[in-house]
Image 1 (spheres, helix red, strand yellow):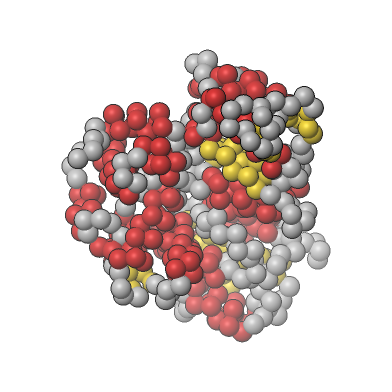
Image 2: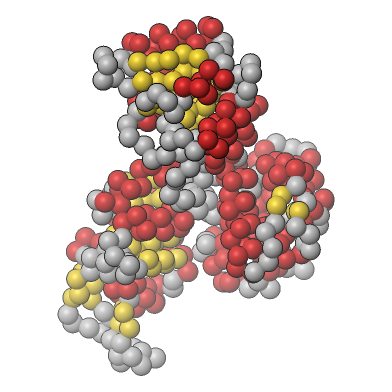
Length: 442
């Protein structure tokens, strides 16, 4: 029993504490149970705790203040799991950004908490030493961040699903970063919806000089360019059936033949496909090949919409603010309290891509270091009042999507091809959305 992991439990509620203590015993853990933060403060760093499970609300110090003092002390810290009520999720998210391992909201499933404790009761890096991948602090994105290193080592094929703009390419880039064995590990991103059928083979597989009119030189296709790296095929569900046959052959054989060439060329790469469509439904409708579906759907990662993981909004907003400031050489901007609440309240139909668009706009139009809600949306407070619109959730989100697409069209001078590429959807999808949402120029 002396070899069992030692857990530090910080919980002032006697009923909750007794229940957790009893379950830890059943699971074979040793434990110390502290009912106040000061007692825990004296022991953490002095005893070989494998995990700390702490409530955020404590009678003397808050769990966040306890964690902050421990960080300031410079002691090597074990992983922290915080227990929080629904109204304190923002505080828990701040703790994650400070280096805490995880949090769980009340009322919680004790099985889930035990699983988290068991998973963390292994040697861990010191608090605050994360890798900085920055995919998000929500549980959904943290699970993806956790599994990516294992997937990257196996050179497997990934299918990333989710709405347009949720960050599928960002996950693919991180997958490639984790997988690369040398500095020269290319990442080639291809928007399948933007490639015309007549140029599909030449773009993906390359062409020889003189293969067709305008082929003045030999050109490597995307498959060859991604050799020893990662090929990211975005919106693979937009491919016509005729293109799917050719793609399937290249994926199966890992060999390509340039247009106008006779010799097949071996390619070694990791394949990541992404789509905002339901590929299984497309297979049932006869619009996507079943054999190709099983080829690309080896491991599937689903990224929830940004409105479904609100705890990521402020975290991503701050990361994007730093990125935009660095790109434009400006001073570092911060969000006001009103701006933070406005970003949390907005449903983000365009997901992370729309968030970046709004942040870039705010940094351009606002001369102040502190950003307010009116800086993020064209029309100022009028744009923010969308949330007050009458009707059901479906009509609300539809109105937000209409505004987002209209802004994109205006930004690109109503050029359909350019707008579709910026939205990462096909021309056909954009036309269908414009028709459905009754969007017209002028």
